[in-house]
Image (cartoon, rainbow, N blue to C red; front, side, top):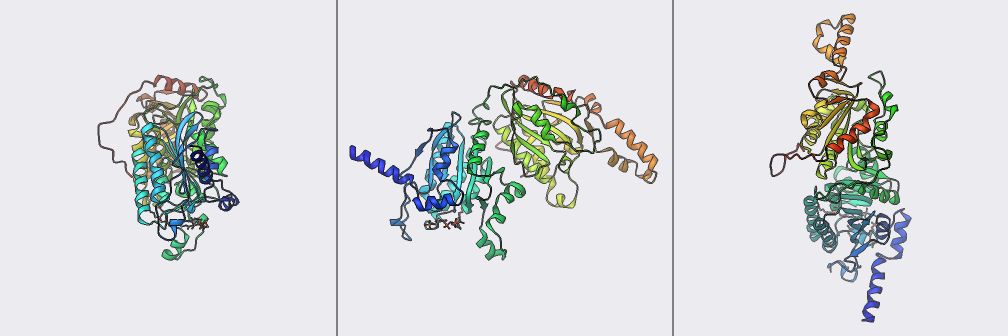
Amino acid sequence: MKHILAELETRREQARMGGGEKRIASQHAKGKLTARERIDLLLDEGSFEEFDMFVEHRINEFGMADNRVMGDGVVTGWGRINGRTVFLFSKDFTVFGGSLSSAHAEKILKVQRQAMKVGAPIIGLFDAGGARIQEGVAALGGYADIFLENTLASGVIPQISVIMGPCAGGDVYSPAITDFIFMVKDTSYMYVTGPDVVKTVTHEDVSHEDLGGYRVHAMKSGVADGAFENDLEALTQVRRLVDFLPLSNREKPPVRESYDEPGREELSLDTLVPANPNKPYDMKELILKVVDEADFFEISPDFAKNIVVGFARIDGRPVGIVANQPQVLAGVLDIDSSRKAARFVRFCDCFEIPLITFVDVPGFMPGTKQEQGGLIRHGAKLLFAFAEATVPKITIITRKAYGGAYDVMSSKHIRGDINYAWPSAEIAVMGAKGAVEIIFRSEIGDADAIAARTAEYQAQFANPFVAASRGYIDDVIMPHSTRRRISNALRNLKGKTLSNPWKKHDNIPL
Ligand code: HXC
């Protein structure tokens, strides 16, 4: 017995050393932590329990028979974040570059399946070189098995991916199916095929960073939902995000005691919207002043900045915020902002997180680039997402709600539960100038006539009353009372039940 215990300790020690001191030092020299150091930062102290520490690959070709490392390039297990259970896997770049063999895949599959059984989030920390080249096709099978589990888990448990080093080939598609992808600036990159293959196929010379660094994915492609300065910041922020989420779709989102009075009034909001309707203001100011303790976890802050989405709490309960941002492109809806918000709305609906929508939108972005890029289909994603969502939906129109974008932004017609407007709201088919230029085209040469028509149109529609007279708006509220009205509505909507017609699944315009 004693010698078994001694051997157990020796083996554990060996496994914990991963690819050995030299490779650990090289990992640190690149500004990266090791797989286990990352786990220690992510989880509550002492809560991690590792599975499959002694698993080794089964490859005998290419000299691999004498080259087995316990753990096989991935550390898996369970632990807690602020007392709540999570499952995780953390790729160990010091062991065969974190590459995936069939044994490595089986370890990931085990935690994926357990997370589903238990109903707890799964977090993947990526730092890997793709399929284990020495194993070949079995690694492809392993990836496909993981993708299937990711797909089945979608909408059942939250799945979060953090890219903390290379993430190439087979490794990119598991994160792509998960709910959120975060990157670490300058040390991480993601691509389907790397610079060498790119050079061969397209003759382009491109760096890892320019092909798949955070500037590409967190700012342009929208593949990543955020990028952080270093490993420590990324892991700390993931802990913060998990606090907003339910453990699974079988649970309600976690309620936290709030020290922020739900009826708190913010007088400064009464002057937030400028008198000139063409002047921008910062929608984030409104968000921060309305939510508990100004605590807002923004998703994709550097991509499609004309829409702001993220998690916050009101009266201690998590909510999803969707808000047009008048400071960027006047808050217009375009392809990227529609895609970004649609995905967020669907996440909230999967996990019973109520949606608060702040509207100041001049319409959809006109132009050949947008139309040729498929604005119709991408815009429809957001429309579809809001329309199908059955969680409590509260909408506040602060200023413009023009045209189709009015309908899309969680309007009453697509089952908004409570739709309020500020006195500054303008709910119309389009802005007065554009409207007059169409319906009074024959008078266009006559500046005085056009000015009079514009003023007439403005007087008719540049207010919330026409919509309110039809019941499209439940009430016109003072900006300073916004938090109170929202928290009251959330409390009253707690018992909401609404379901969609039975279907195998929907056919969202992908
Ligand atoms: C086996 C690998 C490996 C791999 C890296 N290593 N990638 N071993 N299979 N895929 C090993 C290296 O041999 C090396 O071992 C150690 O990991 C560190 O690698 P380096 O190249 O020294 O590190 P670095 O310079 O930082 O470069 C990292 C890298 C590069 C950019 C990821 O290693 C690389 O290009 N790897 C191959 C990427 C790739 O093409 N993968 C296959 C994708 S195809 P030692 O012993 O020296 O420490 C794929 C298909 C699946 O994934 C599709 C499913 C849908």
